[in-house]
Image (cartoon, rainbow, N blue to C red; front, side, top):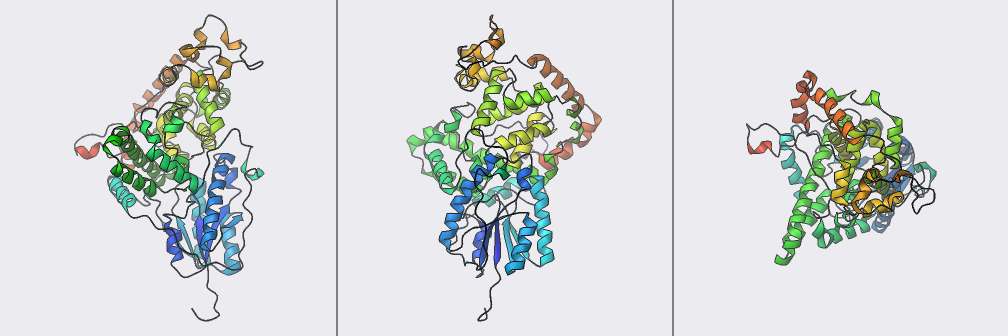
Length: 513
């Protein structure tokens, strides 16, 4: 570099990758002998979207606080800007010039997909080079699903990128103070609590799961309450990138190799199951990468128009508030509203109940739950919503019976009593069907003053029969068969088909997390 010449800085744009370790864009940028602008953009328009919520911001804020501390130790603090991404980059380019923008490929909402395209166009117009890196198991421009698992497994097996040792600071570029957790930009005030975020907490959760909590992973995977401890609780850390998938996969492999003969009895089967779910996680996010429109359109087009005209706003509001009159459904919803997390089977049951018994359109229910989930991961969210609503065309229809689920997962009614205190006076399994009691329990006063509990808003048997009939009619139609193979080719799992080339693909009903 000629004496006196000011080096043009590079931008490392942090999005859903809020870490210093295994961060390919940051590591490669730090090798360029150029000043680095580590940039995080708070985009007000994003936070106006129906899927975004203050709960997400609470978790992100924790992650950014840890990230800022780490970057400061490397010699260059995090630069936070508030505004539209294209305008922020234009301002930085006007202020100092920008030679290159480094980032991870992001598979998220349609909003971010369109935002990224606009940013790349802006960079092209400004003469800024752009370099993107894959996000572990998600493969951009995948040519065939047949090759996906091989590529994915190779990627997560490669050496993690080391933490950069030093960043060259950039002069005369300042950011703003990180907006507070209670800033009005992030929507309605938070109800309940939020899981703690940040790199340090992510490492603690990973270690405690692999070394201790995973011993009961499969035993309690579906049980609300117990699952809060025995499940990994890594989903939010992965969703916002405090951990990379590759880091978790390799930490899991190391732990499995270190198991003593005595530990294998407690941990081996549980850790193997967790590893398979990490792979399924990538599998579902790949669906959104391959077809971003599944956020708003049914994976199989024959199901378009199935529910839209029959939407009932009163059912929707009752479901959202945990006031359907079905105790286990309402307990799960209220727990989710308060804590931001519930185990996968209960998530599936909430969606199933909304989509079948209440016959609500998944496009209306999905944004609401997205805002409640601290670990909102768009690729999993929309793929699972469609699968649990029966509109993929390649998965078996699974309609959860909420009474059976309650009796199986909460036989003593402990979970229901906690979250539906109106029914605390009903003991044991009777709490799951209070309408069978001789006395009129729905208007009975509980230990909460003037608290009442509604009667069921739908007949479970009749609503399920109606749903099955409507879905069966679509699946028998010519329009369904015309597109079925195309949907499987794009999105179907190849696990079964790989055993025999002549074997027809079977519906693959999955159990995650």
